[in-house]
Amino acid sequence: MAVYSVPPFPLGETLKGTDDDGNLINGHWLGQCFKIPANQFPSAPTTNLARQTGKPLCVVVLRNESGIALLPKRVARLKRSAGFSLQEAVDGYADSLAEKEIVIIDEYLDSSGVADDDIFLGVYNGPVTCVTGNTGASFNGDIAVGDQLVAGTAATTQGTASGRISNVTMTATGASAAFNQAANLVGRAMSARTTGETGADILVDACIQL
Image 1 (spheres, rainbow, N blue to C red):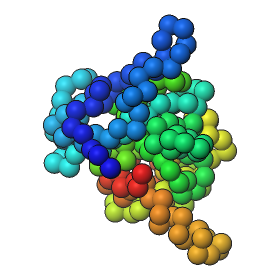
Image 2 (cartoon, rainbow, N blue to C red):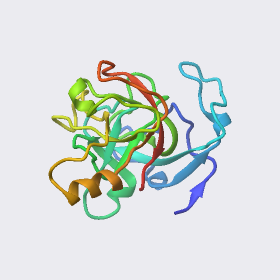
Image 3 (cartoon, one colour):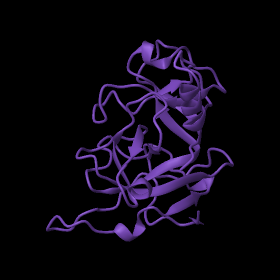
Image 4 (cartoon, one colour):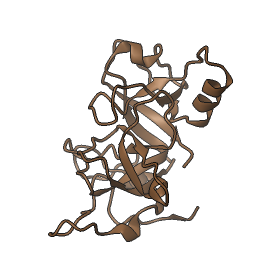
């Protein structure tokens, strides 16, 4: 995988995905990966640059093809259709426990997120903020620093309660479930949250395999 140093737009911004006639544009950027140095992370909610840690952030350029605006800090699922969609687009939030083929939506976007068909930076490696589940039951137990995390269960790929993270939990379904949770890690917790801290930010060291 080729990794470049200067993305076409910075963290906290998106790239227009359609022209005035509604035609898709800027597709030549899709699927390209970039490594962003720690001193180029925005310091939300301002645009000042702030060094948070020495570890860089690895991102991929993706188009939002979900049909809705997708919010920052959520886990999104890559689009599963024949061709290059897995490398170039997302079609909604993760809604299954240990969802495969995922990224984390740029946490520095404003509260409106990324509009449908627009282009954003999806995080797959490095320090990033995610959001805990909207119910304590969806956590699969309190989250401690160092815990391994996966995408949580939700009712739909398009609800605001979707795209959250959860503890890894072994189930009675056997080897297949164990494999999925090991293969589809979002990352490791760098802050702790109890099951009472629903819908809360949590710092994660992402280690997603694209």
